Length: 66
Image 1 (cartoon, helix red, strand yellow):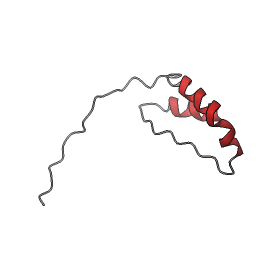
Image 2 (cartoon, rainbow, N blue to C red):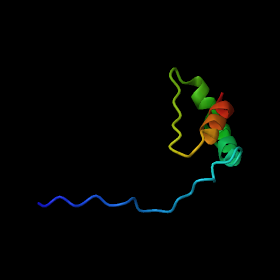
Image 3 (tube, one colour):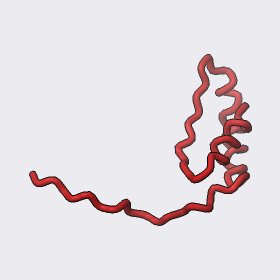
Image 4 (cartoon, helix red, strand yellow):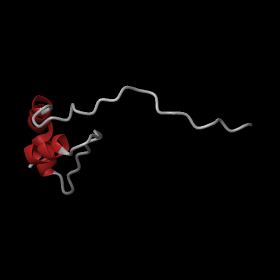
């Protein structure tokens, strides 16, 4: 099998959309729906799969879950 040549990533650049409070509704829903269960857990775990130029949304989720 012949290896494929490297290509550029597919997608649209979305830089500039990671604004503070952008995901506040989702964060509040996560905290309301799963907060009690996370607080009861011996080793609670929440994973933020987002990425961006700044960590605002991940830090806000962390603070809302605490």
